[in-house]
Length: 99
Image (tube, rainbow, N blue to C red; front, top):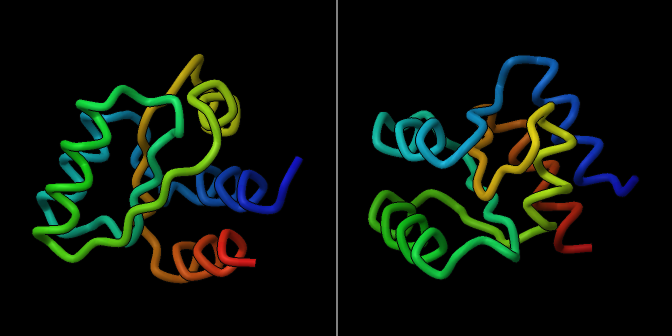
């Protein structure tokens, strides 16, 4: 398993993850999201929705992994989108993706 997915698993265990499009969108609107991760195989509508919302609120967004990979890490079947609610985890994940 790669380091980004491992970090997401830790983030989930720490209770600092909003899992799923509805929860992630709510976190962005409430200003709690530090990072939004969209699955690369998410629908174009989902990608556009989050890119627009996060751009407006200056929340970093990355496309990473598949819905299945993100779902497994978060303990669900599939997840197209998740929000990281902790700035430390968000920074670590962004650094790993840029490596």
